[in-house]
Image (cartoon, rainbow, N blue to C red; front, side, top):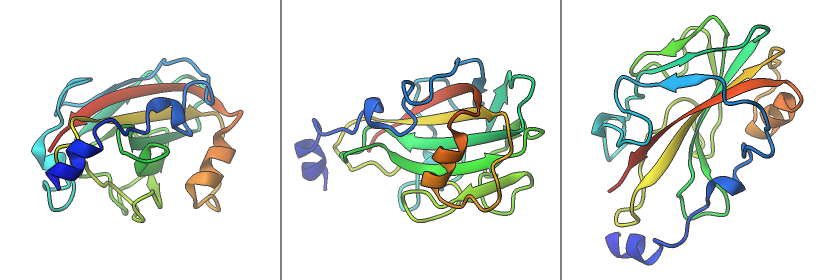
Length: 181
């Protein structure tokens, strides 16, 4: 598997191919996203790595600076270095604006104030890093978006969520963690 990773080292989706690219969702980066488990741009802890690699425990997250008028928060975790045509969405959550943090392990269905949509890996909730061995470091973006109207409960796919978000973004923030096997 490490040989495959080394062969694919140059193949990476890139931020520019994300459906959440800055040019598609052009709003100020006014939200500060932090984690007690890792600094922006630093390695994520092994406990946050995905099933079969780590414990698949979501890291603690905190977001500050939601602008007035925020009626919903959207959290998207993606891997911009996956060797695919676009970044892989690991976790997608619609969160009540009164929730200002996610404690370690809380990004899972049933957590108060959070609703999870099915992400690219076919699950709901947190799915930690599992990059191809030998592929090099992958960058995982924890993106938080402030929305000026609630996302309707009937929105149950990422595609429908992106449509519902358009024209309703107030601000965004990003924390990036890395992971390598």
